[in-house]
Image (cartoon, rainbow, N blue to C red):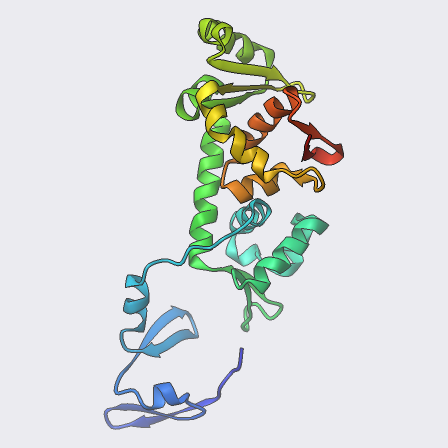
Length: 254
């Protein structure tokens, strides 16, 4: 970012700007000034902000890991979102992902007199997407597995008590095969409706490869399917011998 020195000269009807004024501003008949905070203002062409507000939001394609790092970042108060503090929170792998977000211009480092070492700022569209993800994750974590299943057609059950409640409510459907349930190696129960499994089985298999291992996050990002839902399908695919889980939670097609 290039900083231009602009001279401000008082005039009878206001002020005159001179010096390193960009040609786009110098040739404009009117400009607008918006206060950001004490000592900081935004100078734009007249109508620029309004036109941007009316413009359709650009879709941002992000991987699951990028969304997770963004979610962590926006969860930090702005004044604490400085590199020194963020470095304490993110893992080495997450720091690499953050650098990718900076290269994509989804995240940039803002510097001024208050933040001489910089503070991480997130693009509006990405910020809103991360906030929505936080809200969705929080809702999902607090939902009972039965509520989750009735809403989405799949659920991950964490304990024996909830598994027993689920089995009692859907005993007939599970006997008839309308609902599948498997206990994973992580001792969680992965239940999924036959309809949901049929809708996503081939899609998940097509995302897998016999030669390249993929994580749940990579597959879910490719298919735009929630990681928990994706893992539900993968657990059942492994049970049927169509996929295999390798070390580190990586999957291949059999």
